[in-house]
Length: 556
Image 1 (cartoon, rainbow, N blue to C red):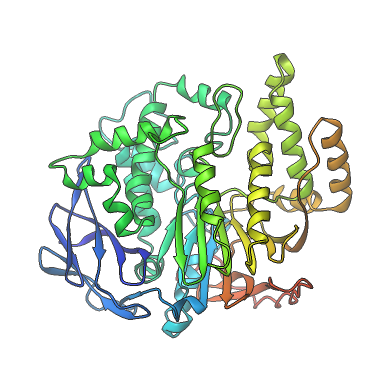
Image 2 (tube, one colour; image 1 turned 60 degrees about the vertical axis):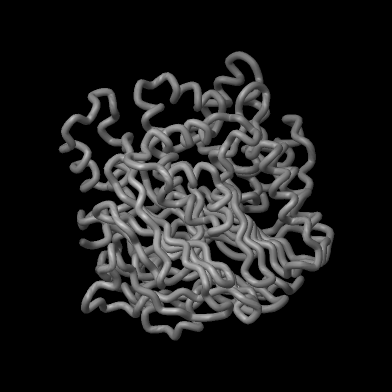
């Protein structure tokens, strides 16, 4: 017996850890003397082992046993053994988080491989193998598009084309069923370097649109269009059920899971839990905006630093006249988590889509929101533009944008050193500083993609969007269209950077810095930008000269 996927180290506390695995069969999985039975979903088997009794500020090697037999690490593995590093007062003094989004899997096709370039996370892991443990990151934050259900690799197209019994109404170039989602995660998480990294670095995850489908939940019109298809109900159930299994449950602590009635039902159920997962997915997809829904936003505390990961896709409220990024109950929960003056030094907000965009794009999204709400042809045209141009970030949900700005400004005045909003999605990387009251420095830090190809229009489009002329034009246009003045101003500090990138947020006491790195070989990254985030007079290092050219599709 061997593991299908994992182990993946997920939530880690001062004395606890969560280790996720996918197994070939039903049985018992043991990590450091703590055991969990697998649960079955549509013929696939999973376990999330709650490891307890650890010491704060400790480093503990571990292996994985299935029905008493060691199944991980593999014999003769070229990687160091798996480790659990717990939180604690000492660990919280210096916290290193790596983050990014939009990670397409490796492909065998040489042409596509060259277009995609080197996977920044894969190269980071290859370098990390040779670094001492105290230089390893304390958390990996995956900010969306962990899998691509609507942009399939050639091997995935062949896989679904050859499946017996695939419904004839299902699209040939998109994932629909749960079994097909299992194949996506297998493609993405079996990369040897990344698999090893995820076994020893606590990993937090949130979805974005491609985990489900491009433009997912951009508007009520989009939802209505999808609901008219014969296959969408199966698709959204499969997407949300697989997200719950592969990504969501590991974001929660053992105590949170023990109090979660959905999780208890699943792990206590005898036999296939697919009917239970369908019911969970249906509730998650419904716009209940209340206690009966499923909250995918979550919180991690690492010493005196707090991570709040915001569900800015499934949590949207679009019915009726509302157009909100989050419903009121979930937004109130977020606001409660930030109301802790003096308890934390740095607040980190993760949201798959950026809060602060290039100025021209942000104003364009607000103008489009106003236009799409109009009746008749004008509204239909606005909706078409929204979907074609992907105008669906926080600025396109102006009420929610303003509420988030107010929440951040209150937090910035509560004794924090920094507030940093981490995002991805937009296929370029940058840092921007918000001008707000309060002593804390507030930033938007965006890293995208980790591994994806770049369309021809990305570079000129985003450079123009960041320009002063485009900013002035878009601001005037927005005000003339009836948009209220923005509650926050911001300026770009670094970027735009193009190409595969991994970013590091380094929190040390009351100081903070961020740096962006890009792969130049299968084992080397080059640092492109470094910023001191806590200084009001921000210092940006000059870009490091690139290394000599290397073969871009070399395997690591």
